Length: 488
Image 1 (cartoon, rainbow, N blue to C red):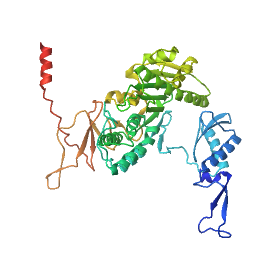
Image 2: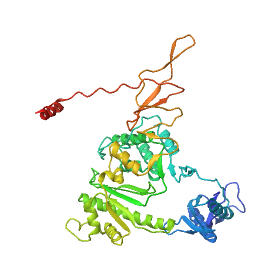
Image 3: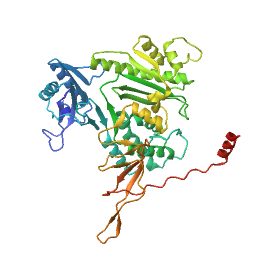
Image 4: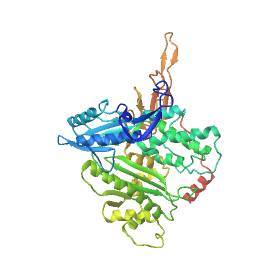
């Protein structure tokens, strides 16, 4: 939409000074503003009111769940118009319906048709033909963040936060020049953690708790998160064609060592990919694991009700939302309204979930802990469980590359081998002397079916020797005592 805010009409009585160089009339005269202009705080509201008055004339009305999503029927085809300020997306099942929707917009406003969207609000959109799969990624945004904080050449890691890492307020405070850098980094990662990368949501949430009192340990953890992004820049959300709306709700009891509050984590998946997720410290201290899980489920239930209503607007069918929890005590508390000494102190605000379970708008099921997708949103996990949760959330490589053990290998001419070659090749020069080719970097790969990924540096066409393996650890006194005990 071109100059969208200039279309709105101002209803308030507003006067502005005459622009310098365009003065008219006597000195001291001011302009009475009739139309909205950029910079006016009412401009966005005036633009939306005009849009909301124009689209219903063509049969498009805002949905109950989202006033910025318009839905209508044109030539017996359902059409959706999604509005984000002055950017509009039109969706329908057939191309003629999309064309009809475009005509409505172009006839009403001065706008440009950019065709099928491939880049929208900083997100790359990839739709492989005839597969029905949709992929969203932000590899360019990640590259910009890494370049901004001078981490483009950092060594990649496999985890956004080291397994078992405990951060606390105490520690050596950062110097003044690094405080703003830490805060700017959190601001840059916020858009990434809320759009296409639920795998970094927990690490980002943990780091953001110390935005006002950063220590060197916090900065080191933030750099580790950037190194993880360095190796997984091409990861994004992937959605298939099947899959019901499902919620995974989890909590980490008393995880915050300073306040002893628990961490809530939930993720909603649909068609194989995450559509809504949260990693947040709970507002109160939980007295038990059951209470922490119950509070987490209650927070997820509020989001579930909105998503259920949104699904009804999109599909016309309203079904119960499947909620999965790995705590039997919390599930029993949801189904049983009895009050006991262990639960009577729980805030009434969290008993909202009992009503939704009773009227069957929520269907709660038990799931094993190793299949709890939201586990990665509550605590720092090891490589294998974290990768399992990440895959279950639909975080997968986009068409821009493939993530292999935290290292992206998408260059042309990539060479793979189950074992690194023993010798580096040499080229003979014109005089017959040996000349080494440019070096090749080696990176470990996970899983171990292809443990090495070779990447030429510069214009190399060969291999170079990999780094020597680490020697086996020497058994210490404690290990020797255990071995003697087993032998006896």
